[in-house]
Amino acid sequence: MSQSSADRYNQIHARSLSDPDGFWGEAAEDITWIKRWDKVLDDSNAPFYRWFTGGVLNTCYNAVDRHVEAGRGAQAAIIYDSPVTKTVQTISYAELQDQVARFAGALRAQGVEKGDRVILYMPMIPQSLVAMLACARLGAVHSVVFGGFAPHELATRINDSRPKAIVSASCGIEPNRVVKYKPMLDAAIEQAEHKPSSVIVFQRPQETATLVEGRDVDWAEAVAKAEPADCVPVAATDPLYILYTSGTTGQPKGVIRDNGGHAVALKWTMKNIYNVEPGEVYWAASDVGWVVGHSYIVYGPLLHGCTTVVFEGKPVGTPDAGTFWRVIEQHKIGTLFTAPTAFRAIKREDPNAELLKKYDLSHFRALFLAGERSDPDTLHWAEDNLNVPVIDHWWQTETGWAISGNPLGVHLFAIKYGSATRPMPGWDVQILNAENKEVPRGDIGAICVKLPLPPGTLPTLWNADDRYRKSYLSDYPGYYQTGDAGFIDDDGYVYIMARTDDIINVAGHRLSTGGMEEVLASHKDVAECAVIGVADDLKGQVPLGFLCLKAGVTRPHEEIVKEVVQLVREQIGPVADFKRAVVVERLPKTRSGKILRGTMQKIADNQDYKTPATIDDPGILPEIAEALQSLGYAKAHQAG
Image (cartoon, rainbow, N blue to C red; front, side, top):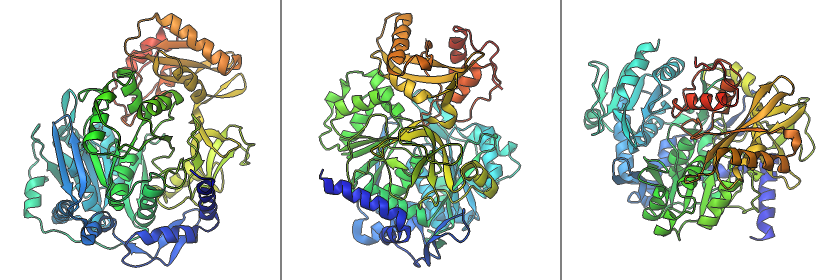
């Protein structure tokens, strides 16, 4: 690409910070407004900034109805691809409009109106998107809780958001089992102090849920009787959804997303960050329970008029490590966005990408990764085998879209492995020290964003303004604290090295566990790894590595451990004091693929810990404890 497109990025970025009203006001022209805004950026109640105050719109109208009205009703809106049920189904924009209007009518018949909350406890099926859009159509606030979440955690979210109704399905389907949702939902409602007035259940053929008389309603029956509902006008600053993220206090944090700023920002990102055109097929291989699912399975692609893919399966085992390639070929997908952990799983099962050779991916243009740091080894592997740009970008539940990335629709910057490239327009990213001062380029510090945050980010937390201030704004006045640590290099590239609490202090040296993981992942036999800091009487903390080996590796574990210890010594230096590592079969993760380093650290340091609600398989924690015991740690581990 020419120098001029790099200049264009620099101009866009500079303008987004110096003239946010002009920049985002122009972007907002791509959204259909019922009433134009009075003010683009409203700073009258800082630090509680608001975007597009006075504006009125409807997000569902912008995501569905306007495409039908523009003559594109026959275009596919959703492709549902479910290897676990052997189903592929296409829903056009016109069909989606009809389904959403009818389900909104069914919600309204249960008393749901503008401003009411509705919890969705759903698997990866098109009905999950229909329910989200139906809430948006009515101006109701949806809160999606990952299907199959433990009853206690669901109960805390019921108590916090106080939903009028809950929408669920009879089950979710894993590669080897059917997960019954209804018993968990019933248990959660029983535990919760707040009781929803109704529960709408979508019965799947694999499992029929028992309905509670007088409270529960069958989805199909409710829709058959419903009067289709029109789009309800809402203020740009009204909430569209609440998405809970685990709080450190055990009380979940309800991240709020508004209607106006959210629609403007996501629509803008589809072309500028992902370089996708309306009408193209876009696939975010995530789950609607996560922020990636909200932003890039549901709202982003549909606001932009793309076809979005709802995939109910896994990167491996449904049926094999070639399933992603099959989906890309079959549905002519140009752009895929997924978590690095998905690619690590594929690489582990099929290290030489033999399965890829069976598929034609000639139309595939770009792979985006986010959710965890993309280790250079996985990035290289994906690049070498796919021959397309592989872009690591970085964002959070709170931000709703990328803080830092490589804006494919503006300019493709040279990729630096281990970096999430440059701050995106709207983001003034700075690296600060404890005194709230910027550190020199190349030095590690707290990654912060100068306020105001751009549109589409959290304006506050649900019913918790003080907690919002305390969690994000108090440590670095005038800035949003990301909770991540890292540095910016001389070229302005952002490197996310670890969560702030994953920076370990070894005898006074501040070291990033992410940097060490990068070295471990470069070893030819290592498929995946994690490094934590464990307590040490002499040095305060020392690093400890966990290694998952590639399929088919039969060498003695001691040899591999010796080699990775030597690698860290060579590449980071003796100062890291990296001398301990253990081979494990698998690592404990959340369902979105984040490795639970904090929990592993507590086990190692003999602290009581609570099994995180977001864990994919609690059975892994005893395996980790056993591995740690072999090194003399976790002597008295116990789960709370």
